[in-house]
Length: 88
Image (cartoon, rainbow, N blue to C red; front, top):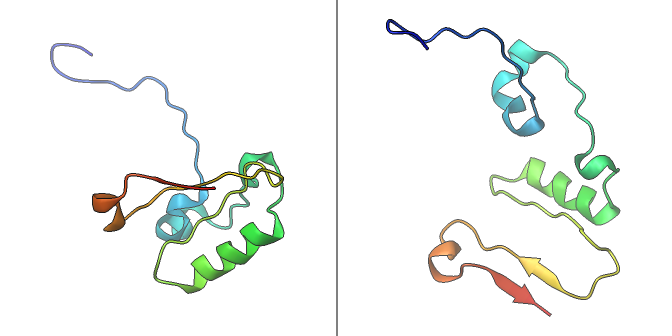
């Protein structure tokens, strides 16, 4: 930063699949690593397939497949009523 402007000297960036649908023409075919450093569980793959075919946003991440507590974060219009929901 100087008196007459801002000069970028160096830059680094990481990309993920979030903007792939917008930037695919510029990025080309990028193979993104699996999230959390592992392959998706069958349930996660099923929801991802539904997400790709739906106008809705459907996401599922299994943090502990043997766990007994499920946390469901409410989003969209539901976030006005529910901040989060704990399903036991």
